[in-house]
Length: 379
Image (cartoon, rainbow, N blue to C red):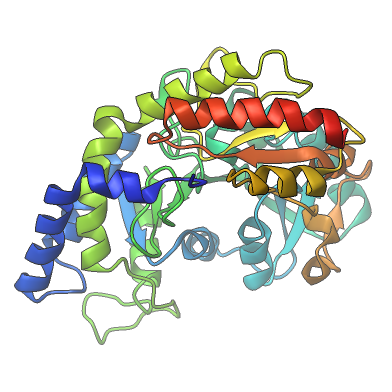
């Protein structure tokens, strides 16, 4: 059993994928070109924004947004404590200070009340300038933008939506990667929409920011290749990856988001009686299920449970075992005044199960049966 079965995905689209890859190789153009521009148009249309700028990976996408805004030393950017390292890493990389805030235990996403408390703390007790918040659409579920957007407007914060895991999710019928002033996603292979390597994209409705991001992604170029008007980076999506994503996006739109939601329903039914807290999706939201993450009962030996499941051929993962504020790299960062107790609790109890649009019913049943049985011996 695969944690996310990319082999089954390839088998389902082998003819179209092989044709797209061979056509790109035969064309002899491996940077830029129509596969990239066409993909950007399709991605922007899917999300519902004016601009999409592709780049080399999701981490670069976040950093490009901060660079376009001029975020740097002395600035504070509010980041959820329960997320992947990149969201805070890019803040430090541009010289700004990440301020970690707690998350909602039911949705795993940024807690608006914790954000407000952290903002008040920064204003009252530090010399930092609050500049932006970076809510993450964790595990495929859009953050609580119904509350976060008005709050950030009130506080004067720019919103950088980290949709690395959220592409394909929606809130009130509006798709993820359209909520932030700028939003980003990742095309890492295991993401809801993934390529066969690294890739990323930035989304915005702002013409000026889009133009600046496009410049920054190619060495800060101006009108020509050797006209460099600012210091940028080298961050382009390869033509081959664009062609691959073009094939995958068709399947993603046609059935994969619906299929992965069907698999989540399977788990919800199969695990109803389990001594677990299952992931919650608010009534006005739809997840793209980058991960299916349960919360184990306190006192459960998670390591022993994972070992036992692995022995039965069932892979699992822990996203994430350590709060961001405990990472040694963030020793000089700020933390919301009440700490992040929910994050600490989640890091000790979460477990992600095999998931994806190609998960079979048989595998889902095996996961559920083994998990419920083994919980009795590890709790």
